[in-house]
Length: 386
Image (cartoon, rainbow, N blue to C red; front, side):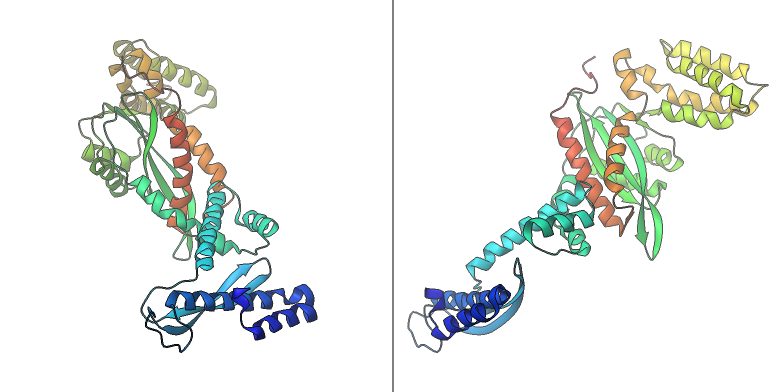
């Protein structure tokens, strides 16, 4: 066998296996690996050690230690170096590819919502490798290049934009903080949904929303006919700055929830909800405005704070009457995000607290890409031809 041409090496390997049985296999493999790499370097240099040869392409230049994780445990090997060229043993190159594939598999398990402890148990059972939770988390960083490319991909014309934010806990400067995940959804001329972008910030302040919206425009977002979102003050200010001429629809679902805070008596809540629902379900804007005036007068004495709130806020939820009936159901709320938020929380539940904002963005981006790919081949969400 060529790689064991040195008779002393053969004797060493045989002695280890004879004396220590399988316990000596690790050291035996170390000797085999080292000898194989030496032979490969000689073949690469086209000359043996200290051999004067006109065909020599370079010179040996010592060794570099490396730890290989194998089913026999960690094996320390000495990688032969060359002086000027970039020689590297071929079997280790294959090992690097396998190691990278393993790391990507770990990262994808992490994105799928499998806890780092479970990932470690799976790899130990299948591969005989002991992998720490830290290694699993670090492996997920291999996906960063792909995820960053997706988040920065060029955009085109979209008719409708939906905006939403959810919160996850992250560690920052030794403290646990709430991190806002800003997500933008679009519906194109084909009527299908897509996830346009995602960003993380430690609040929903105007500057964060504005920066996020400006990044969508920079990437090519144009042609918007409507924007649907909640009425967070920072978001509203950002929308006025970036999309001042686009029709804004305040989410009717959130409006219904907000209204309940102004109802003074519990027994009034059902009636108030029904009155607001009738306004939203009116056949046209004129009837909606008429029903709103009736409700404002109805609660002027029994619930004056509610009356004032309705007069000021309900009109922000009536922009959908600008569109035909077939579009209103989808445009009236930001429910497009509800299923996505549930899936995100299902995956993030196993993490509980993210070690950093970047790790939070990484996992959520993976979830969003998966959902976005399903939407591309899915059904039409809004019939935009009408």
